[in-house]
Image 1 (cartoon, one colour):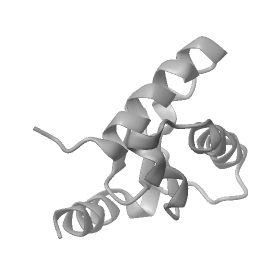
Image 2 (cartoon, rainbow, N blue to C red; image 1 turned 45 degrees about the horizontal axis):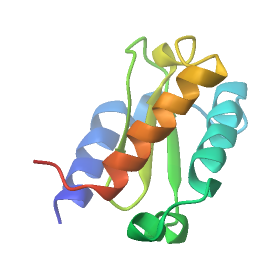
Image 3 (cartoon, helix red, strand yellow; image 1 turned 30 degrees about the vertical axis):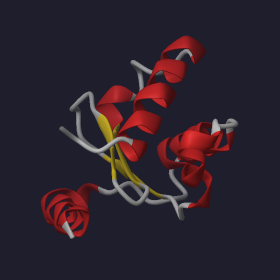
Image 4 (cartoon, rainbow, N blue to C red; image 1 turned 30 degrees about the horizontal axis):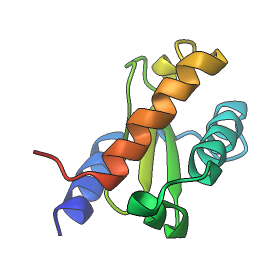
Length: 105
């Protein structure tokens, strides 16, 4: 499965930069991820709440975040200042949902 291969490649590249789950950055992203997932979905995309989400925060200045199929979320610390306010996190929520649900074209 391509998502498994992509996950392994990302972990090989950034695995040594994964922030521990007890770190404040990880705690912040975990809370944001729970909010992204728990917001009600329409019937067409309801499977998102059934996924077992795996959230990784990568200590890297890159301003990026992405989700692989199956609920594996990666957030680079460089984006955290950018998504600091509620409106920007709302935009991140919409993009994250669409990346989990919709196939890439």
